[in-house]
Image (cartoon, rainbow, N blue to C red):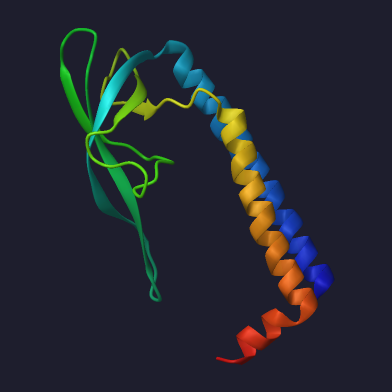
Length: 146
């Protein structure tokens, strides 16, 4: 069981690393041609993201409003790493938008590598706790209690 759990952790970590590198490259390419703006968080919306016979997956998406350099007011939803707990309506957020289509915008992250390292650290912490709990037999006790 330990070897399988370790292989699974390595596979998930590798997938996480590849996804982070891919997202960072795409974000940097978008930011190269985009225009910065200050947006205001208007509200949060619960968006259905996937459905299966056993469960439905939802995601909170922020509605942001900003003004382009030409004075056009843009309001739209974007996928985000923002937290609804710490980010309330009215909060100001830096965004980058495409000059050819201002509705194509992202929340600006000045330190994408640092953000990726933080995500990896949280994942490693959670994975480490699971491995430790399994090693100490706590995981079997919890799962066996059901």
